[in-house]
Image: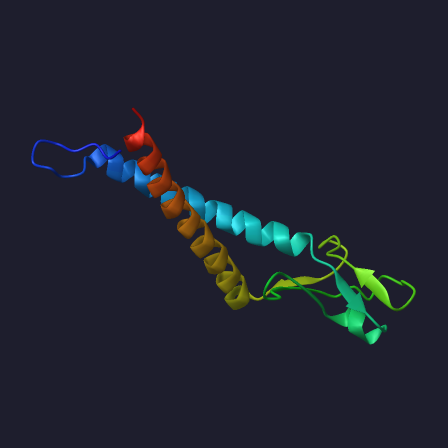
Length: 124
């Protein structure tokens, strides 16, 4: 429930709470995109493919050179240590991934907030 002052405006406290909630959702979106890329797998069919292995979901934004590895082919690889395997980040696809997750979180937040408000106001 929004706190209102006498003039009917939403209070500053409620606006700050909502701003912090949106900032928290943005942080969660970044973390979800990062975890999705770090838990991704790619199948490589030859030694040349190890030169640039791409990770990320739904867009590939994390690239690694894993030529130091010598797996039997075809091999399924995941992100390895960036200290041992040169790593690069494509910021455009990363931003799209973060915005997609943020959009889903916002929809869930607004739907959940309105559903919770309806449940709370309909209670006897």
